Amino acid sequence: MIDLELIKELKLGNEVAFKKMVDILQPELLRFAFMLCKNKELSLDLCQDCFVTVHQKVNTLKDEKNFKSWVFKVLKNKYLDYSKSPKNATTEDIVDWENTVFEQSSEDKLYALQKLEKILSQFDTDEKELILLVNLQGLSFREIAESWNMSENSIKTRYYRLIKKIEK
Amino acid sequence: MEEKELNKLFNEIRSLQIKSDPYMSTRVLAQTKSLTSVNKWNYLWKFIAGVSFTCCIALFSYIQLQKNSTYFVAEVETPQLVKVDIADLNLPSDLEVEIVLPEGVSFHSNTYAELDRLQSLRLEIDSNAIKHIPFVVKSEIKGLKKFQIKFYDKSNKLIHSKELSIKFSEKQGVKS
Image (cartoon, rainbow over all chains, first blue to last red; front, side, top):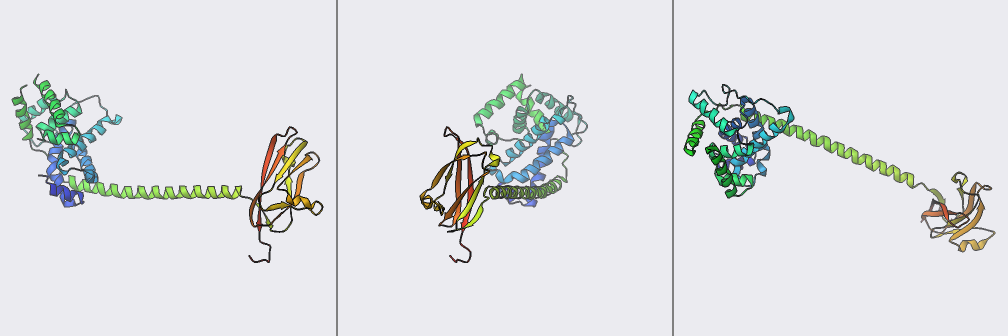
């Protein structure tokens, strides 16, 4: 778990603390990145870029409590930067489900992944991010609201609107 | 899809093990170190470029200043003949020229001693007949002095003006 002590050490440039933070957050970030871009290699690249930015800018983080949501925000921005670049524009959107960031998984679990991917495909990146942060990463509305500079109520309203859309 | 079903779906996905990259932190640290060294070089090059640019600007300004501050040298309390060249000015034939002296400088003439009381002198000249305007000045004080030479046409309209600088310094052999 990422505690405040670890973040303080990160701000001091402690490499051991940095490695520990990477070990803790990497699986969650990889899963999040994969759900956004659906490509294993790109997920790894995005995670690496994200950690580089975290290493360089951790000192600009004012509230250490929002560290995790801040890291996810950095990752999402990396993905947006990547997808906005004209050289990365693709017309095809085929997912290679045999080559994911997940360990060998059963047919059922792959089916679950595909099902979630189908659900998420109707949303834009911000909306996907909100759903994934709440349901997959377990971040609270308060954490997301602080990271996004929005009120907790507007985040809740936005989230429940998306859930209603899924239920339909 | 109901909320329960959605939660079940997310639980299933959360339970999937991730293939983490064991060398991720090593690669990230190596990348940040190389970025830091690249940034250091960038800052150094920017600094060198900035200093060079500033030096060029300073040198250019200095040269311009030197160009603008061309002056003649004379001694104080010594009559000095000044010749203002008008051949290349393309002035009309009949005109008036006004010589305005700076403070501390006076005209000098053995024939017309009263000229030394004037601070400016206006003369009618024929620019076809003369190539330069001669006059003799004397300064009582040291320093760079600027003379104004103004040319007027028949209707008393200023048609040209010239500035002349003379630096008056201590007489040789006299200590200040």
